[in-house]
Length: 84
Length: 468
Image (cartoon, rainbow over all chains, first blue to last red; front, top):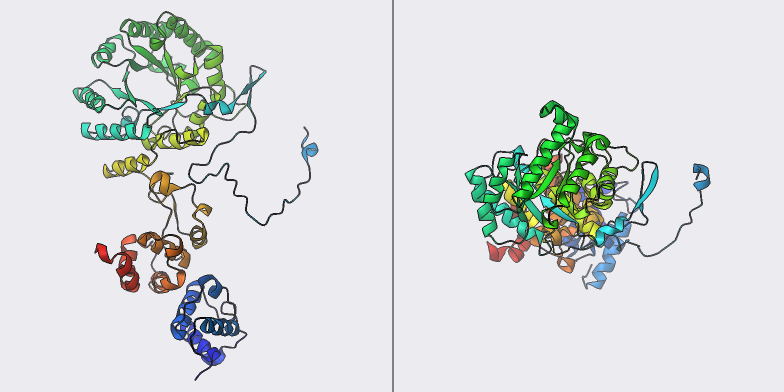
C-alpha cells in the first residue's frame, strides 16, 4: 500500500496538474508548486476524499508544504480511526 | 499654539485583546456621533460657543417635502402612490414624530384628494401642511383644506427680488411679503416663510431686517400662529465649515436668526440642495447650531441635484441622539423597494438603500466579512434595514466570497455554517467563468442558485429540499 506521503503527492499532482516525480516533500504548495487560493481549497477537499477524513478548515489551510501535509493527515487519520 | 510646540511623543498601549471602541460603534445602532468639546465660531469678531450635545435633549426633527420639492423633479405621482408613500412615512416616523411634517401642493383637485386620503389614514405624524405662492388669494385654498400651516415663498436674494420678481426696491418687496403674512394671520393660518436663495442674499441689508419685522408681527398673534422660518439654500451654496463668511455660512445663518433675531429653534427649518455634495452635512450642521428642523426628501430626490435625503437624515438623527427614538428604520428599505417598483432610479451604490450599498466584491473584504461581519459592514444592516451584508461574485471575490454567499443563501449562522472546503466545486466554477470562459460581468444570484443546486446537491436537499 502506498505511503501517506505518496498518496499526498499523487493528489497534489492531479489537482495542480503536475508530474508527481517533480513534487518533493519540502515543496511549498504555493511558493514552489504554484497553488492559487481556490486550488488550496481543492487540495484539502481532495485529501479528505482520498483518505476518508474531515479536516479542520483553518488548520488544514495553514499547512505549507507537501511533507507537513502528509504528517498532518496522518495525525488526523489516527484521531479519526482511519487506517493508512 | 505654534505647530512645533504641539509635538509630543505617543506610546504604544500594548494589548492582547481588541478594543473595538463599542461606545461609539455599538453594532446595533448607526455609529454614534460623540463630541468632546464645544463648537466654536467667530461671529462679528466675537468668539461664540455652541454646545453640540444639546441635540441629544432638544426636540430636533425632520420634515418632508417628497410631495413638493421631490415632485418638482419627476413626473407626478398618482394619488394611490402618494397615499402609500405617506403611509410608509407615518410608519417610519414612529410615535415621537421624528418625521414631523410633510407638505402638499394644494392647487388641483388631485392635490386636495390626496391630502384628504392621507389624513384619513389617521397617522399623527407626519402632520400635513401646504405650500403656496406668496399670493393672498391662495390662503383660501389652505383654509378650505383645513390646514393649520402653509409654506410661502419669500425669496430674499437680490437675484430673486430684482431679477426674477422685478420689485422696484427691497422695501417694496418686504412690504409685499409682509402683506401676505398679515393675510395668513387674518385667515388663522401659520405662515412658514421660505427664505429662498438665502445663501446668496444680503443678510445685513435685507434678510435680518425682514426677519426682525416678521418677529414683531408674530408678537401680535398666538404662539401657534407665529411665523416659522425655512432657510432655503436654493442653489446649494451653503457651507458647514467654521470660519466661513455670510451669506454662505450655515453656523452664522443659524446664529443670526436664532440669537440675534430671536427666532426660537423650533421655528427654524433648514432646506438644502445638493449641487456641491454638501446637502446632508449642511442640514445636520443646522441642527447642531440651533435649528430644530431639517427638511428633506426621500432618497434626496428633488429639484436638480436634490435635497437632504430623508433616510440619510434619519440615520444622522439616530447617530446624534444615540438612540432609535422609536423610528422604524426597516421601513426605509420598504420605501426604497416601493420607489424602485415605480421605476424611481436609485443608484446601486447609494447609501443605505442602493442594491449594493453593503455588498463587497473584493475577496479580501469577503474574507473579513466571513470572520466577523462588523469588519466590513457599517452597522447591523440586517437588524436595522433588513439588509444583511452581501458579496457580489466576480474573479476578485475568492473562495471567501463564495462561502459567504452560500451561507447567506441557506441562512446558516454560527456552527451551522458550511466551510470553504465543502464549497470547493462552486469556487472552482466561479473562477473558471473568468479564467476559462473570459467572462467580464458579475455572477448573478440566479446563476449561483442553479450552480449550488447542481454542485452541492446534499446541502440543497437539506436546506432547500422542503421548499422546492
